[in-house]
Image (cartoon, rainbow, N blue to C red; front, top):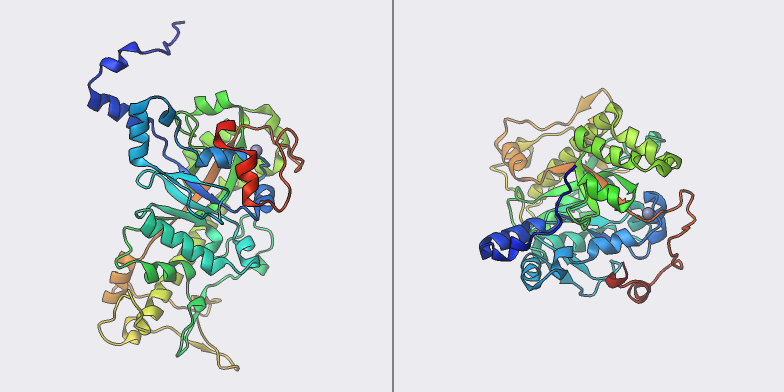
Length: 393
Ligand SMILES: [Zn+2]
């Protein structure tokens, strides 16, 4: 068999535009994560990976930046190191706003525990929309609406979204994600790219298998990837890679997760979830317009002419509009109404995704970090800077 040559001395003789184009195509397309430094233990538990290395690798400049001056210039043109006061991340992050997606790697529960949800989400969205030039954004599904991935106890969940009708609305009554968009971004929002991660799956494999799979970038410098929740073929490729490592047979929770995200039940639940998120965004847009808040989509007339939902009155004076009330009724929007048409055209549409993260460390299954260096809990920011610079990876 002919061996493939790994050297190409003619490269230097190519026209400069061609060389620059080649360097550009070598840049990774990444999902940059903003990792929660204070809840790292909880994230590790949830994601079944105990190594900090994938996160730090993912935050590092692309591999080609260190090849030569020309390649570095290309890398610098498309990306920048963000190292401003990052109390919400493990350390500085390399971001390519036109090529990457910016993901909020927090569990929603952790943010809620600390009453950080609104503040954190606001900061994240403002960063993405303004300061990072409108980079595509991604966040855990729960920030948009409850989603029970494991399908364990759905009785504990809010099944149906609702909004509260009040004379003086407070922000927290509204769909947080859309409301924050509306505050900080001029209409229309149609060019906003927003993904929601329905599942986070860590893939533990050896480097050579990961390279051969071509799933995590040419040079493995894109260790986090987002895949459409219904892209069966792509999900199968990730599963095949996972199965290429025989020691993964012990990772029963990940095996279950992989079968789960390929099941029709999962997909129909995601569809139902997205329907609820869309409804919540529309209802929030309607309320904002009713209150005539900034960047709202104005009515041509009365609010109730655009949408006239059944308002449920409670003995304590609370007035709620539910998406649906069992089999009794649904408060759907009339697709022929001009305001509804306009709102549907310009509101952000959330794309449900599965997030895959590559770890080339041999993390243990049961939570003992094994070969992976451990960190004290709770860590402080300086732990990451002192213990692991990018050069050690
Ligand atoms: Zn790991």
